[in-house]
Amino acid sequence: MADDNEGKAAMDGNGDASEMAGPAIHILVQYVKDFSFENPNAPMVLQETEQQPKINVSVNVNAKPLDEHMQDFEVELMIDAKADTDTDVVFAVEIVYGGVFRFENIPEENLQPVVMIEGPRLLFPFVRQIISDATRNGGFPPLLLDPIDFGRLYQDRIAQAQADAGEQPQS
Image 1 (tube, rainbow, N blue to C red):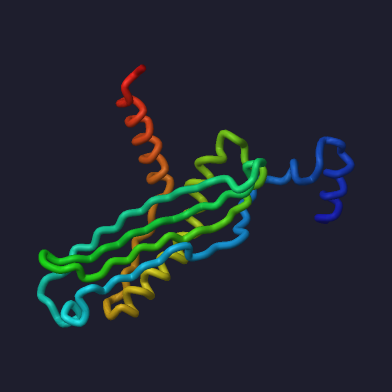
Image 2: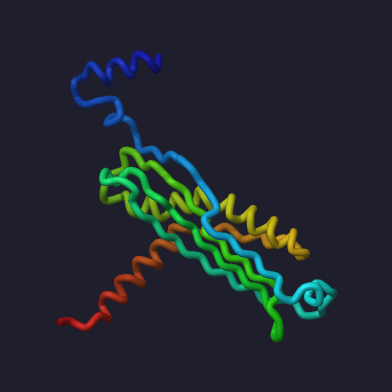
């Protein structure tokens, strides 16, 4: 049945089969680009303490095209997590996790949001696991990051860029 549809698409004369295919995202490769785990106050900080550390997490996403056809993109998901008490740094984790994606048959007006939302969404489970393993291997309970709403993160980034553009002095 699939062969019949492919043959029909090719014989229609309305374009090749790839033009008629729906949108697709392919992960070509993914990798740790940069990683750091610091446990600067070990072993003292690993002893029982009465104070729960405060954990601050920041997330950033960057993407850049890798070809002139705007089909292949490198997407980087950067997460910094730092746990500290009033007096000590408990641990700090920084990771830049990258992936090369191929985005096919996505309308140009939708390409940027798809790259900036779906790319990091697909990378996140791997980053979450790396951070969890690193904190556990550092002697702490695993840090299990909550799911991230990359759509909201993208909207916030666009809103911030528009606000920054509105604050720029006019020449």
